[in-house]
Each structure stands twice: as structure tokens, then as C-alpha cells.
Image (cartoon, rainbow, N blue to C red; front, side):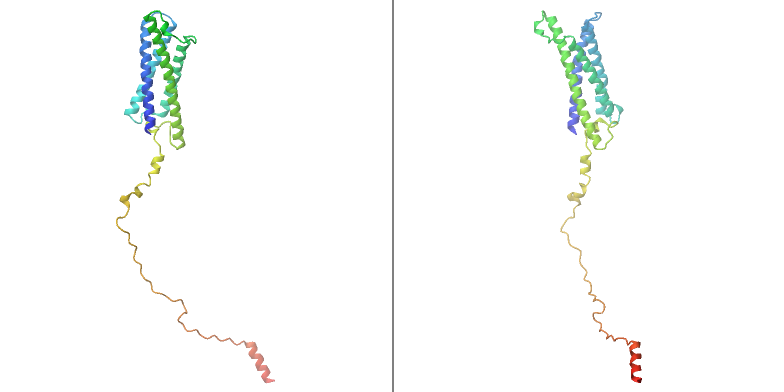
Length: 233
């Protein structure tokens, strides 16, 4: 099914793009705040780690799934487990970044100088893209589970199957099993002539032309003996 592969490619590409943004900003903050123990440095270090883990896990799965078939990296169980791990990590990163504002919405327009405004914008970018990655991964996990349940109901082995085969359905293959026998190539050409019928001679039933034989009643011995006794009297 082309829809599943399109959504999968879009989800992986978007998550990797947003992770690259978070990775770049976090790496910049780590280099700038090196040697300073602040909440911002801790948050940037955690965002840097999550961004690196996203590329380490998702990029090989995406490349191997597009180039090779049958590898364990393309198994449904492996992809579901990796996406579940990424979902937890991005949720933790987004929650930790949001907790630094203590529930307040930052207004970067009120910054005192351009440097503070730049830091504020970068902080908002990390927070926004972290939540977006968490949301996209969650939506993809739901989509993956739906197709897993659908494939299981069709009687297919799911957990060690290739993700590329998850979007295909066996219903179409079963429906076209008898299709070759119905094509015009297999139909006889020209008008169909019935087979000639061989006339069979009429055979009369037994006894139809035979002369009926008269049947006589068999004399009974007792009656004859009785008649002879009467004559002697």
C-alpha cells in the first residue's frame, strides 16, 4: 500500500529534520556554556544527546529499509521498539525544556538586547521542535500498530516481517487467483459447434412382438379324484 510507505517516509524525514535543528542549537549552547553549570547547559546537553540518538537509530533503519530487504533492522518489532524509545526521549526533552519556563510563555519581543532575543528564540525553537517530534512519533506509532493489527487479522506473521511488506495486503492476491482463466486469450475463438448426435436404433421392450401364449389352468388332483368317486357310485 503506497499510503503507508508515503506516511512512513514523511514521518522519518520530518523527525530527522526537526532533530537536526534541535541538535544544532543544542550543540551551539553546549559550546557557549562550557564550564558553566546552569539549567540551560543541562537542557542543551540533554537535547544534544536526544538529537544524536535520533540520527543513530532512525537514519540506519530508514536507509537499510530502502536498500536492503530481510535485514533485522527492517523488522516490524525492531522499528516499533525504536520508535517507542524515541517517543519517550523526545517527551522527556520537551518536558524538561518546558519546565524551565515554570509554566510561563516567553515573549522574546521584550528582550533587552539582540543577544537575549536570540537566546530566547533558540530556546523556543528547541521547545517547539521537541514537542513536534514527540507528536509525529506518537502518530506514527499509532499508524504502525493499526497496520500490525490488520496484518495479524489476515493471518500473517508480523513481528519478524519486513516493514516494507506491512502495507501490502493478501486480499488482492487471493482475489486475482482465478483471473487468468477468465481472460479473452483463454476463450475459444470462433463459434462453438455442438457435437454430432449419433442416432440409436429403437429397441422394443421384451414381449412386444411376441404372440401371447394361452395359459391353461392346472387341474387339481383332489377335484379329479372326487369326480371319479362319484362316477363309481
